[in-house]
Length: 329
Image 1 (cartoon, rainbow, N blue to C red):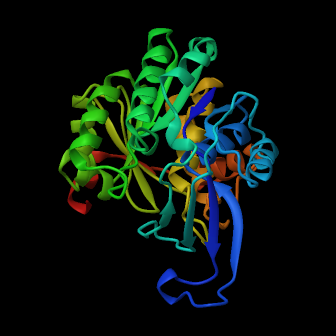
Image 2 (tube, rainbow, N blue to C red):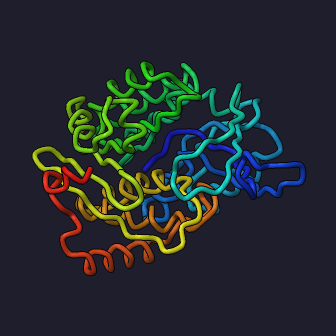
């Protein structure tokens, strides 16, 4: 399977950004939604390659080394005479946080249809592709690249997973909604968050309504994450809430949604049923919040499977019909 998107240099501050002062300690790593999802997919057992453009600065060597350390094939990554994008963040377990980004004129933003053309044989022969609204918002050329890659995979019978991942500092609502409307009919799995993304993109803070509206755009299956403890799965004809295994020691929720998408897509490619894939994805995402940064904690699949099995056996009825929980939303 393939993941199309951006890799970022990650600078993790040792305190809340508003409290940062001269001498605040920081930790350097590598992340970005594409790398987070690719690392999760590889850990879940899928042969995974990253399709991205990275820069020619001094950090490119350790960046690509980290990609390979995570079990992701970096041999198809392209280079550009630009700096790598970067972002600054601080630890947060809730997921509602602000980042400081340095992305203008980055290597990642040069992603274009010509890169997609160079990867066409890979795309048409892959089992699945993951991409996101972040990738589509980097530049006009990256938006065209997302659409070209999605169409190539869909036309060849492959699976497409898409997370709109709305970022208002990157793009406006109208542009994000327009891209979503073109991508949704091509997707096998569309994952979004509620209320934040759902409210911005489909005008509702209700997970059931959001899922219905996304399916109305043409998405075959929709997963709506709704806080740290549950998600809604709508496959058409039936919408069910699924509980998420609790993490007793949450540290940082950065990349948890990407971990979900990467794990779910990998397990679908490997033959899991949709329910099994989602259970594994929820368990992996829960485990991931014990690490700092987007790739600070990438659980091995044996650990993910054990947590999913324990949660399944210890929480009978954890998946309930959406209608039965409507008054609690």
